[in-house]
Length: 226
Image (cartoon, rainbow, N blue to C red; front, side, top):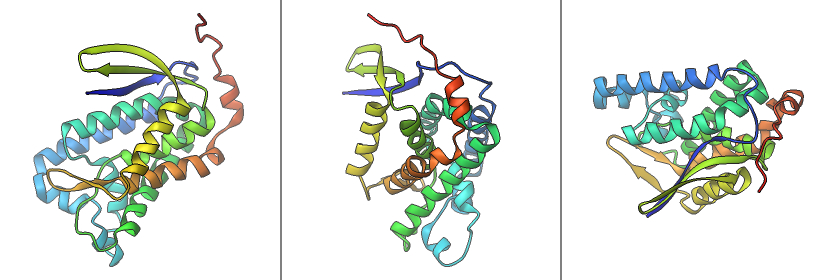
């Protein structure tokens, strides 16, 4: 058994403090604590349930559901990916534009799931769609950047550097192959269709939000050669 855990972009230096990314992580953590206290009732109220939305109710849950998670593993995994790719995108867009893009990507991702299964009564929740949008714009903006990655195969663990186009591309391929499969969790599910929708939003429209002058300033010619 093995896997890949992205740790961050090794090809560019931070141009500014990633305040919005840290704020998003903090809000996700806070809402998850509220979930633990509120239980099933909290999840049913604030998660996105497609059949309610298609009948014109609880549209606000398209927003609130992107800050909710099904388990400790779910939120930790999502926040690791957000921290790996978010700071570079935040630098490239600027703080406020990045926040708007993140929220828009999350809403589009949830809408993709709702439209894909409009009669579903399964709660959908998680930041994965918004983070997929971040990864989508990352792959088209920084395709050659090397991502510092924790690689583990059984008991063998090492740090390696993988081009973003391969790492994110492989991740997206896995989402496409798992299209339509809902991961059942304690009180709901997260659909791969939301991941695909968020990623395509970022890949197709994300460059509209990127300031190319900021991108040029962030390049770091410090990648080691051997």
